[in-house]
Every structure is written in structure tokens, then in C-alpha cells.
Length: 325
Image (cartoon, rainbow, N blue to C red; front, side, top):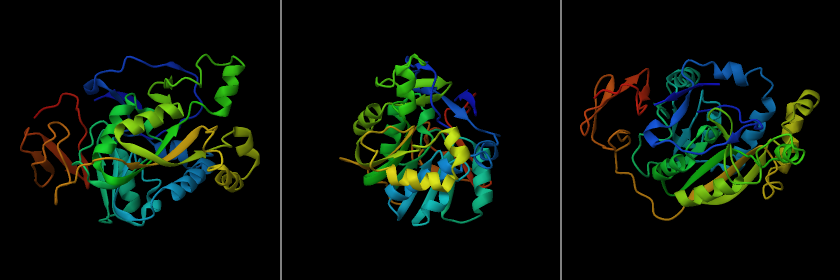
């Protein structure tokens, strides 16, 4: 797990924690910092999660529009899902960790279709209405302030644009059974998010739908994913067999949502801003769009802040510890 810092991709297994409240002011909200982590090798490769990878790809293939102009992957990590975005003209990979972005860039090379941006999901450094499609998989469960994250996604998605979201579901079968057998204190039936370890939350489906609607998203389709995420099944049944069975159940089970993971395809509803022609970034500190480019940084003329560019990675992490203009 990444360290907690105050200034996002990790497993969202079944929870055992208590309820959360007392949301901090936005400037103090903590995030999971994966800088310097070996997330790819410690969590995915050779770690018995082939089944999870396969079923998430099945769900994304079903819900994600196959082609478009510009796609933003929020919490892209090391670029695990990038091969599903081949129909898009431009792909923006955003994660807080520069080290994960460097790993993604090493895997993908110098393909001009990709942009690499280090930033917080609370402060996206893009002008409003910039992207046609946004994707966020295995990330929302790190959000202490879900409405703020969804509002930021809605701000950068254009009118009638698409948002494919995965969230960790607190109302899955195992959690309900454990609660009814009095093996856990928290209820899977109330709407309050549950934090089972620091900065790892599970959410009630109604809570997520409510905040999607308040952010301006209308849910179009859903998939219930990872129905067979049980160690005993994963040990005895080949992952591809489990994935095929899971794929057959994703849509039929969607109304009930009995699984630990839920995928949602939503569309940007109502009015949305149109991105100015030729303008891409905005300053996450002052929200100004007058940025000039130097050899190794972008400079904001509005607040005089410097945003570094190193190895093809734009570093817009904000707020910064000991920030200086």
C-alpha cells in the first residue's frame, strides 16, 4: 500500500473497519502516495490476480466507448489498462506518483498519443470540458471526499461525454453474511462509506449513484464484477474459466450488485463547459489558464508558480508541502 500523505490504485478487498466522518478541509485532504512503490510487481504480476485483471477488462470492454478523441485515465498507475484505449486519438494518464508514470512511459515508449500527468484527483490540472471520456478504475476507494473527486471529473468531461467508474461495493454478499452472523460491526446496508484501513473505503451503490447525479452524470449501464473473488475458487479454477463465468453474470447481476466491485458507465448530463481551442492545462493552484512553457517547466502567469516537466511527465501535484511560488 502507498503511504498516506497530505498534500491512487490499490486493491479494494472486503472491509473490516469503522465508519468515517468529519471530512477535512480540501487543502488538508490526505491522498495515497505511491511514489517509489513497486505496485506493479507487488500487487499484480505473479500475485494471483489474473482473474481480477481479466474481469475488469471484460467490464471495460462492455462499457467504454471504443473510440473517441481524448480519454483521461484518472489513477492510471503503471498503465495496466492502456491497451484498451487504442481507439482514442489521445490518452492522458494521470496519477499522483511520478515513479508510476515513469514506469508507464517506459512500457509505452515515446508514442505521442500519450500524455503523462502527475496530479491529485482533487485538483485536476485541465481546462473544463477538455476530455470526451474519463476512466477511473480501482481509485475511488482512496477518496475521502467523493463529491469533490466526482465534481472535478465532471468539470473536465465535455457535454454528453462519458465516464466509466469502478468502485468498491460495501453491500456485497460476503459483507452481508458477515454482518448477519455478527462477524463485523459495520452495516453493509447503510449509505455511509466504511474505511477498513487508512484511506481505503467501500461504498454503498446508492451513495455512489447519488453523488454521480449531483456531479452531473446520468448512469447508463452497470456491471457487477468479481463475483468469484474468493481465494478457494481462485486456487482450484483456472482464472480464464472464472473470468468467462464472471463475464456471463456481470449484466444479469448488475441490478442486485452482490459483488465486491461495480462498474458504471455514466454520461455527462446538462450543461458543460467547452474547452477553449488550443488550451489544455490550467493551474491547479489559481485555476488560471495563462501558462507559458519553458525548457523544463510550465509557468503560471496568474500566480507565478512553476510546474516542472521531467522525462515527459508534467508535475502538477498540488497542494505541495512547503509550496513556494
